[in-house]
Image (cartoon, rainbow, N blue to C red):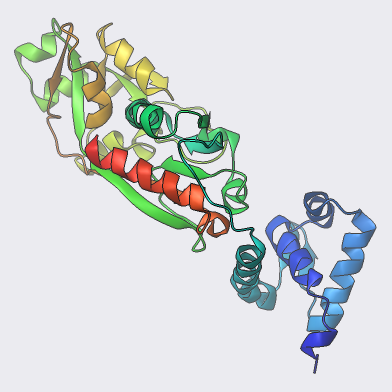
Amino acid sequence: MNHFRQIDLNLLTYLDALLRERNVTRAAEQLNITQPAMSNALKRLRDLLNDPILVRTSEGMVPTERALAMKPQVRQILYAVEEVIQPSRGFEALESSRVFRIMVSDYAASTLMSPLLKALRVQAPHITLDLMTPSDVSFHDVENGKVDLAINRFDDLPQSFHQKLLWNDDFACLVHKNHALLENYTLENYLTAQHSWVSKTGFGVGIGMTPDAVQKLGWVDNALAQLGHTRHIKVFTRNYHVAMHLALEGLIATLPRRAANLYKDNSDVVLREPPFPIPAIDLRMIWSPLLQHDEGHRWFRTLLAEVASRS
């Protein structure tokens, strides 16, 4: 039996990196140690736990069942240690020149950042925002606190993340004022009109689109597929402003309502209800447990949630 005082607790850090990277070299790079040092740490872990930890297969290094079971427990231990040793610092919003790094989807950036900036000008005029796209970061970056917040619609999240719902949003159609669809606004005519498509961007680099696959990859087209329909998509884009601008060129843009409302005062387009039901979506912000008790981060989260509730 291993005695607690005889265990090198640094091994927990090595174990955490190995289980996340599943590669000795990458784990060593993450912790800024040499590859031989990480290999030695893996050997010590195997001896300590009487378990291989990582097993080499044709698909690379795969964690054992025991290692997978330990992974969330190891993470929680390391989070707790980080919180204990985190220096206690007061936060004064009016004086702070902190940079908050936010992974934000195009939809969220278009609808949320403007009112957030207005609030910051009054409450924290020296704070800077560093906005990144979903393809710029990974869940690891958020988990390790390299990114302060990620704001998007998330289907699956690691259990360790903290999260808060910012709002729910339904859908609206942007249609050029002279579009023939407005003369007879039916589902049949909607389907035969030309449309722009906007992706529901998540983490990681996106993939190319084809008309045959679109019904599997978007809120609007998923809803149509449930009814046995597809629409005529002329342009695929990852940018909501592109889709909104193309409505001025005659393409139908079916978007979350808060995005469509950015053009509500434009006299060249009309907002209409979609001619079929589309489930509402939610916008959430997520953050690392490492930042949960940081005073500045807590203040910023509160402000962002208040801004979202008023928007």
